[in-house]
Image 1: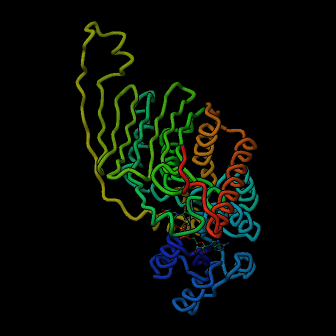
Image 2: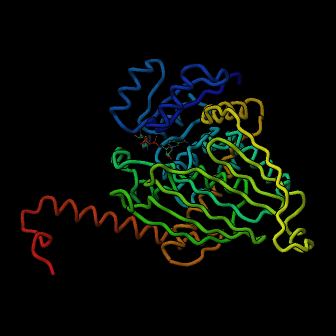
Amino acid sequence: MEKVRVGVIGIGNIGSAHVNFIASGAVENMQLTALCDINDEKINLLKEKYPNIPVFKKYEDLLKSGLTDAIIVSTPHYLHPIIAIEGFKHSQNVLIEKPAGVYTSIVEKMNKEAKKSGKVFAIMFNQRTDPLFIKAREIVKSGKLGIPKRLVWIITNWYRTQAYYNSGEWRATWNGEGGGVLLNQAPHNLDLLQWIFGVPKRVRGFCTSGKYHNISVEDDATIYAEYENGATATFITSTGECPGTNRLEICGDLGKIVLEEGKLKWYKLPKAEREICFTEENGFYEPKVEIEEYSYKSMDGHQVIIRNFANAILNNEPLIANGFEGINSLMISNATYLSSWTDSWVDIPLNQKEFENHLKELCEKEKLDNKLKSEEKISDNYNQRWQVRW
Ligand SMILES: NC(=O)c1ccc[n+]([C@@H]2O[C@H](COP(=O)([O-])OP(=O)(O)OC[C@H]3O[C@@H](n4cnc5c(N)ncnc54)[C@H](O)[C@@H]3O)[C@@H](O)[C@H]2O)c1
């Protein structure tokens, strides 16, 4: 194979960016050979724009067509693992959009099918390509920060207006999306958190649904997580704060790193704080701190991940974001939801059945609320809400 023949399934906001990029010929060892979207209007537009590329309405037909060696799945989240599983069964190399799915049991099935197929399996964690996060990971993994103590990430610059949530029926609903900011925007950061600092052993989550928008899922969340070695992580995210913040601080016993405003600052202690604490006689001793600062130019991460996917298929290039790792951030967000719903600590790995039962309840309640709302609209009776209420 000289060029990977790729099909894109789900051509909305991000799918059309992937299609444009590949169709432009920018990935020299990849060729766009099939397109798929369920929406008739989009199908017509795609046919007009790409008259030489077959457009399918059903992903099953694209998979059976024999036109592709690889697929990129950029549909709403629930479908990522479902389509990926079918893709692997049809000997496709698969790149899925984040998140890996909505609940972990189906993601485990996807991972099993991926393993069985032996095909390349990648996930679009494009922020892993950012040089500052790569540097942060290198520092933490090298042990140069010493024993990890704490991570604090305020990631509230995911601001979205109501118009964003109104732009698609599946958005911000339990039935269509399966979650809010933790499942749509913050998976990038939760992935980086686990990629740099590891997966915690238990979490306590606080999620508020519809705090800033008319939506049924959470648009504000705080996670407090504990690690096996005693380290902790606090993670705060929201789509309702403006101006937002993106500040990641990781502290170890040899110093700390702070990533903010496109810079990484590395604060280095001359020796381990634990040693200073128990050997220094001056109770108010302040060690000299050396500071190194880094800033880099970053490239569009989506393009880097797509090129890497093609090179992994053709030349065994190591994947930047291996699809099997998608479950880690999903495990953290699922555990956070469960913790918030049950007002208790949740261990990782979480009880999948318990999570799924709660999610099912929320989906059923949402369906009922929507039914009541639509009945209310056509009712011509006076409404109790308009009466004087004491
Ligand atoms: N990596 C990133 O930076 C990034 C950015 C945006 C979105 N995403 C992810 O991409 C996915 C899509 O998000 P979006 O904003 O593009 O949504 P979108 O609603 O704009 O696009 C989704 C598309 O999927 C199509 N679709 C739905 N069901 C389908 C099916 N059964 N078969 C084929 N097509 C189907 C829809 O018609 C629509 O065109 C989400 O999972 C989201 O989290 C990732």
